[in-house]
Image 1 (cartoon, rainbow, N blue to C red):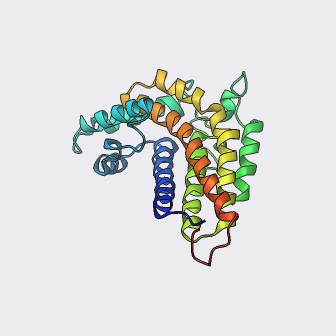
Image 2 (image 1 turned 45 degrees about the horizontal axis):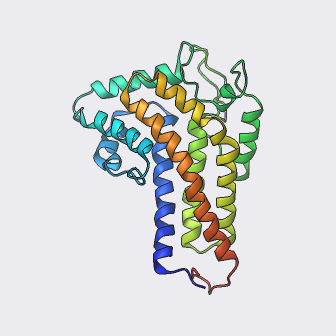
Image 3 (image 1 turned 90 degrees about the horizontal axis):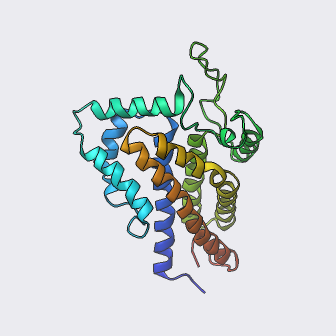
Length: 254
């Protein structure tokens, strides 16, 4: 049985939403905010109508905190940039003890040590797709930062999911059934075996320790988005199974 036009459109929309969600999250947590990024985020109006916010009060709360923060500061006002840059540095970089350490290993050992087994397992998942961050490099000795950033950094894990979400969306468009199914399966595995095992604890620290409503809202958005992605990936898995059980003409979805 062919998928209906509505089903096809819904799946394409879901795949696009996943790309958007992970794109925001990775940019928000990979590096310090820039004035340009804040300008583009404000201009996009993304948080004025976040997908699923109407059905998920927790997500809506986070989106509203971010929206209100952006709306309270015009583009020419540098106070927002200064506030967020300071908050990001204090939360995730240091130089003092981090209120919200952005590495999975820190939440999986009592001593909050880095470069533990979790980082090794994440590295293995990355290697299948040739993923490597440009920040896996020598650090700045003057700041005492590690010789390289651990692979289980929240920003890297989100960036990895973003890149696979883009590839899955493209595979769907090309009707590459096996590639699409494998990408969805690997993303679901990574989400459950890695991100969901520590992201709630990280979001809790971020929510409690952030000095700005922007990062408090980001904690809500992160936690709820990852749980929502469980459902989106389940829908994509069902679509992949449906595709593999049929034999359409080349270039056609069933």
